Amino acid sequence: FRMFGDYNLTGKNPMDFTLDIKRLGAKTMQAFSFGEIQRADGQMSGELKLSGDPADPVIRGELAFKEFNFVLKQLGAPFSLKNQTVAFKGQSVQMDNFTLIDSTGQKLVTTGRVLFPDLPNYSYRFNVKANDFLAINAGRYANDHFFGNAKIDASMDISGVNESYTVNGDIKIV
Image (cartoon, rainbow, N blue to C red; front, side, top):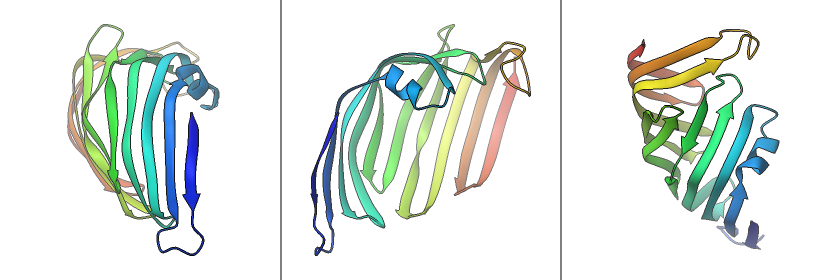
């Protein structure tokens, strides 16, 4: 990938950058995860344009995950992203039917957005739906809290501001 552009020290909107990600391998992302992402495979690509003031940035573009596979260390279950896109729309990040697939082919679908018009503050609202989704497949020593297998059915709304959040809905271990 490469980043190019200008930073005008005297302008009202000093930033004008483009981040061009032709191909960012999952293994590279795994290397920066401090061991939390394992068995990563696939790639991400996209282009983001960053403009405005650093305290009030505007980001436009998309990141695309094509055949992106990984395991979250704490959960132990393998997940896949197949042709999924995250859209950056000015001062928000949008996910529309963003679909995570488990090892049995079941889907967890997320729709929502993160708003950041007043950094460092941000707000978010997501809807999450899943049926018979294999969320946990953790070995006995994978973490200090749980182990074993867990499939879930979920219909939840998650919203909040910064670290304060609310979760409404249902989640059932099946």
